[in-house]
Image (cartoon, protein in one colour):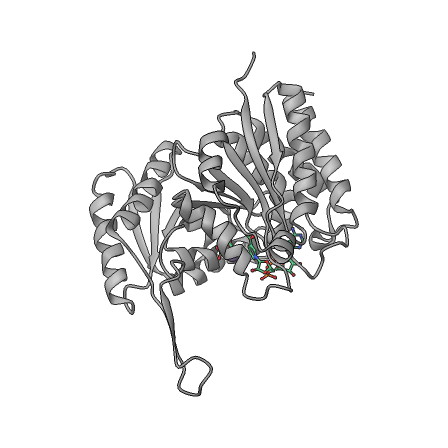
Length: 357
Ligand code: NAD
Ligand code: IPM
Ligand code: MN
């Protein structure tokens, strides 16, 4: 079957970003070759070096170009010790999330192999966090007063709109319905944060009534963090605001083998999406060939899933499980392999699985 051309913008970024994306691109190339997907990749050099050398973060016109000419963005990570305030990351990553209105940040928390679990209490861990991705404390609204003095005031405003809250909650319920999940759990802090908290509470109740077959559940986000550790099996779909989702998903990564295992999708249904591992640029291990590429490989699988290529994500998961059981893993998972060695193993097994070998 001849597939229509799909164009992917690739942003390797900083630190281990280029190391794990290089492996991800090899996987995409192999899959493209075997399944004749007609994928085309276009490299983008956005990141710390371009920022420091030319003062360019997200080039002028980039957002329009991305939405007009691409089907997906495959993204590594940003973050460089020479830019401690992440000014370039705010412009590039948050600029794309907000500029393309990618309001869903979907982050699965799935334990692929029991040996990676750190909990004494063995339970199924397979849920997904739907993190609101455009609002909350990420809107750059605020400022300083008397900056640099002992009387300094710093304000960051947390923004929650009716539209923003409703669409992520609705997406969580729609996802639950389509994927036969039993429950959507809202994580908020409405016992302390009055106005935004109340909006989330009211909209959650309202939207949940439209989905009577799905249980609408609520936890305050502090106890949600504890429950993720003590009873992770109770979760199906979690929906939460931007900052809480950021924190909870690093916690989630810790439950399933660490940041090297966690993939994510930033999406606006029906439009171009940005796919990236949950982890950052990991400057502590950059250049050491130690970065675990699995998060980036699973992310490539999520991207193909969103591009309507069936079966690939599952094949990558099977290959990853094999890599874990064979100890073909990087030091974060207790192995001795390099980034590229793990990549070669997972790529070979993914293709085998896809070809039914
Ligand atoms: P981080 O995710 O980069 O690293 C946290 C810890 O996890 C480090 O010890 C690191 O070595 C380890 N780790 C992360 N990914 C790994 C992998 N694939 N394999 C093995 N170990 C891995 O978070 P941080 O240290 O808080 O942040 C570093 C930089 O990355 C900062 O500039 C931060 O702002 C940025 N960051 C960017 C993104 C993104 O671009 N999406 C996400 C998170 C953090
Ligand atoms: C993430 C990251 C980003 C976030 C940072 C780098 C702005 O931590 O994608 O999880 O907070 O969203
Ligand atoms: Mn994060």
